[in-house]
Length: 332
Image 1 (cartoon, rainbow, N blue to C red):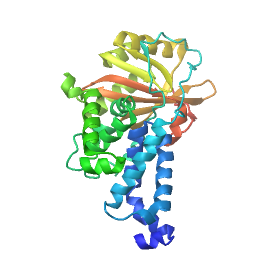
Image 2 (cartoon, rainbow, N blue to C red):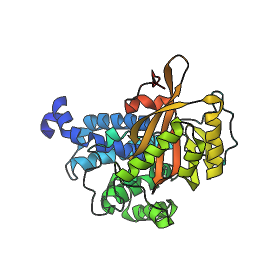
Image 3 (cartoon, rainbow, N blue to C red):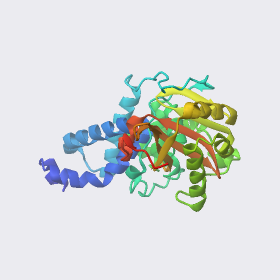
Image 4 (tube, rainbow, N blue to C red):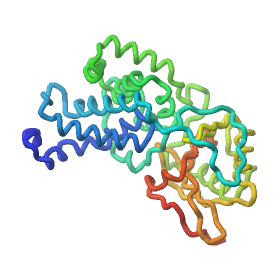
């Protein structure tokens, strides 16, 4: 198969690489935090692999060789100055509430769970420390973006994918000692998992416990029942909305923000989906013409039966989740 691909057989190359395509895209997403940037990096990876297949000597597996190319393409992207800039407040008819702080990871985008199907089933290597599902969560991907590029690469390759130190050193053109040092610094910088912070972990995806919390959120949001919504929030609930940098922390602050969203009779319909292994919803503002227009996508981070984070993304991400830009108003 490799000989045929080296001879210019594109079908043979596609057959060689197709089984790695999704896991490579997820790897690029973890590295870059942007679904669109990850797609671009994947295409660059496959093109570079196609053009450089003659130099593949087989000393490592084809999968490892592809990860080497993808990682270095992502490192180049991380070091570039072309990341998506922050946007100003642009929510019509809603006054901006003074934020708790301004976030820096404004290029963050959600990853549709449809992409993750099969991509997270690949067995991790013996060095892995994170579950694949935990390492795709919005909190984890966001935290990665705050690390220096090389530390991000080392931590993902070692602790998420389980490659050995000497394999990572070869991928990065570095020494084993340098890899170990970068990994130590990266581990020290990442926030601890919820369980070690005294928080309840999220319920299992699709479990009755998750379904019950999600149903309560939908009822509260669609009916603009602020009291019911507030009852779902943890004391330290956190809300962000990339590419706008405004971040809000604490139940009272987030409640004030939501009150402004609901003000003036604004009502929404929510269409369920999933992002980053978490419950998510396309939000559609009901209009007088009988059409609800998509205003964005909300992703919930749960802790037990409460919500400890809400992340709002722009309506431009809706098509990636198979959601329309608008829909007919629901009866009543």
